Length: 295
Image: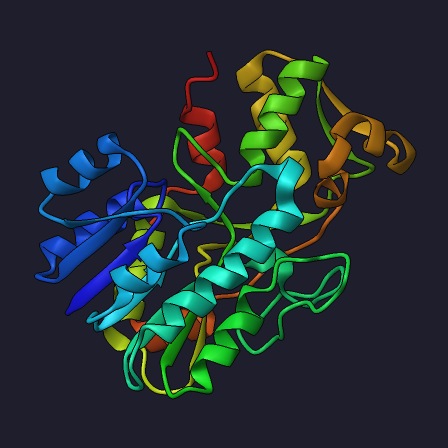
């Protein structure tokens, strides 16, 4: 297959591009820099220069492709609403360049899937539709599917290796700045997780196996890891005290991440594993947090 990948030189994109090429696919990767272009050429990928703000470069990159995988997202949290709007425009542009019957894989998140405390999120649960949560990749993908384009939606948990761990990377930065590793109340709220290599493999399987309509996948290995376990492990690695905070103190400590620090977002991938033949092999989140070099 001919596959266009945005975010091709990023955290997930880097191992995904290599896996796609090793599986015999032709990959065109989006790059906004000379260094990124060189990285792509070194593994045998074609280069499309551009970025998420250059919609013409996205349409050009997607033209003539059998599939597009959209991994790119601007993680500048001070501009989250603008980044969310940019993502929607990017999905619309990519979808407009694909012919009916071709495939668009869109990246979403477990954290923007409907479900209250204690609910283990399933692939059948809808995406959150609230004014306070501006990120809506699944809504944009549904609109693309109405044109006859096949759509796969991959919901990500905390994707980890020993260098990065999704939102936990930011919690580690906060702990360094505050001098304590914290959780809220009992720290019983849970975050789903999956190792980087398994997530990259899931994307390849989704590219190869997604059919007509809209199919939702959960890239989840561990259903839920408690925030207390996360805080205790990172505190030990940082050599910092571990403390429980009241909800009132959480806003002061975590800042814009206070909402996430109290969010319970476990998820199942039973359906995904069965239908893709995806068998994650670990390591687990706590193992990677234990083995990372904090200094």
